[in-house]
Image (cartoon, rainbow over all chains, first blue to last red):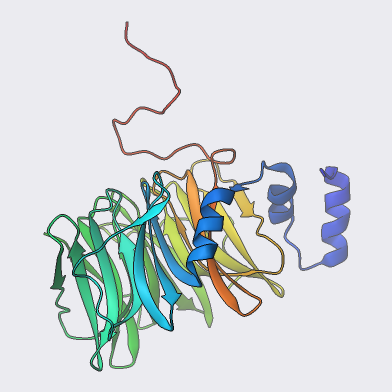
Length: 168
Length: 150
């Protein structure tokens, strides 16, 4: 249903806290469409969080059998791809990010009492630690779409900071 | 990277790495900050001076689109600011689900949203092509735009 601008103005004046630009945007713009088929597959895979979308790839953390694990979904083929060498049953993933080619994943995980930042290269099936200088505790990570740089939220001496790190 | 001595969280990079979005504490409220890289110059945002706390910013390839979560009264909303046109798009989400985080595809064609509700977390994807023009790397043709070969 589309509302007339006068009605929107009245609605905004009545509610007071409602922003007119947001109302206009909501009512007059075309709506984004849920990707129903993909969403049903994601729903069936189990509880999920922390998505990272780039190109035709979706990385996310999925809970299954009481364990959180990283999953990389090829959106064209609508199915997860294997990530050999990435998972450890005793590791708890906190954050993941993927580049637009689906080749590089940056991740933060807890393992044996440590929280670590890692880079996974799918073509090499190799996981390598990324050092933080000065040392700190990483939490959320983002990766540039071309995979050449990552941004990571790091706790140092009680303060949250953001580090930018070039990826070789 | 410094922004005074305040906390800086929730980083996001544009696809080309020229824009960094973070959430900083400003006047006691979590507020998204957009900066050019590597200069650190602050980029203006038209619609996002209010509706804090801001969460989970995500940028398109050239930084044209900034998607994030904002708070409006009791409701947490997913919105996208188009920095080229100044428009603000609100993402209408299903039912009683509350958005926790989001990720915008670099080309702006899709968005993934993490939603909480009924004791379960889930990730849903939305097609943004009816809403947004693509934001592509320089030199890539827009699909369907036709040939310009003489």
